[in-house]
Length: 367
Image (cartoon, rainbow, N blue to C red; front, side):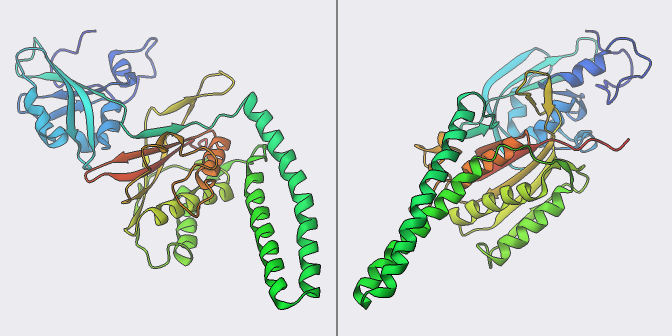
């Protein structure tokens, strides 16, 4: 593919409406690999969409910045006069994230001093992602759970009623035992009620939602309850379009994640939103891919999940908390799956912080 002669190198931001076949700018922007054009002064002359996504910066914010400012001292590994490659390099990105990558640079023969840099990220060492698709045997398990929950609640109701009758007709010492029976029955019933949240397979009514309004509501609930007196920071992209979602389910997802963060650490909780180009998920029916550009993160400064359960965080009844039931994150996974989205767990930054990242679909633009 020949780069344009004369003037600046431009990957381009949009295709010409008159083009009958894709041009070089379209192809470069479609690449999933981050690509940066660096001028003789060491400044960025252009970046493709994958480059913007990796750096977490808008196109205008990338242009003109020194390469070293964007990727740290790793830029010293690149040479301008010969092709070069550096493998398993740690980059320090503009927002403080550290990312292990393979870094490659190539000079432009007809442009002395110019080079093109490509960055190939490694998968994070502590990343657990769930798309939450539940088909086949998963649906059979859901049906079995629904039937089991119904059958268990019937005898529990009878046991509770009998305990109440005994409590009214026995002395104080025995009444304490019957109260214990009643309280334990109530606890088991509450657990079954939570389990029944997994058995509702009805499709959600999805509409355009202002994700920041949803976050504000969930934040208010948290501050009035389990996060009372805690600092909850907001780092929002105010230009985000509407998300396609179910209002109450989105609030429940965020409350569960913030409750998890509040229990993991006494430090501040950070809520962050961003727009991610190029993130998509293959549809369950195999008919194309679903774009998931809306990112919402709930971040805490706790130690993260123990190594033994990190890969199973979203499975029911998996927890490191003595008083936990292990259903909060499983319900998050279920609700995110109902939205056709992805939920990720990762350890990121220096020092490492726990990040739960939601990737959700954008609502269709109005006609």
